Length: 335
Image 1 (tube, rainbow, N blue to C red):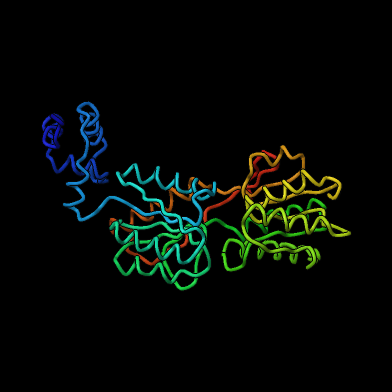
Image 2 (spheres, rainbow, N blue to C red):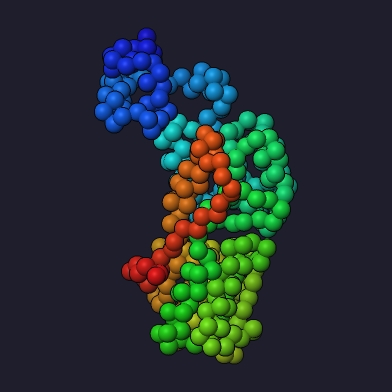
């Protein structure tokens, strides 16, 4: 017969209410009592009856995570951080794929409402998010990750996109590099827009000319990075330093570089957001602005749990986590 909460309480010499508070990580429980109760829980192999608990609390102990692409390494690492943090508090995660479309997001919102999740973490596919308001109208807290959207306000966890790009490009200018190119994503996505703004701001601050012919915009995919970087390299006088605005576009740029060595400037240097593990293998000098991806997911989950428990009742907040720069595997903090 499976042990009950009463068995745990009797063995630990506490009330069932105290056991419940320990299980729910109530900060009012003293460390000594918590340790004793958790020891009994482990020894008896006590399992919380989540069905009964959810009925009592009118919670499903589940959270939805909506991502534009479930095959995207960045998004799934964020999801891992979210899941790890939620599991610490007994929550499960439901992952939905919007397939980078507003219709997909609307359908996902319907599913999350149908599943009666307790909250949602959303990585928007584009720049508009008014359709996410249905979640808040149903009383569900929402945390945006990586991107902000027009028409919708909520908590959000991002990184310092503009400032990180500004600091990285400034370093390169100070090291003597002057001829810059840029390969970025569509401007309705805040991460793409902020990174380009940081790039432009750095060049303006350093009185370094920006050549419009050396700027290309596409989407955040490998094929787009390959094509746009190729367009830069196939010019009569290609830029020697290129900022590529995300992980997959840099992969595309490296693929082009590997197969078209004869078209590359001899002193080519690639700068990028995120840190492809094989960037150094390509043999092209470069730097990557690395994001704390796991921490982004964990922090988003923490904020959502605070909202679910009504621990955070203040105004919505946008948190921007710090990045660091990697020169071919050697990190130096951007300060």
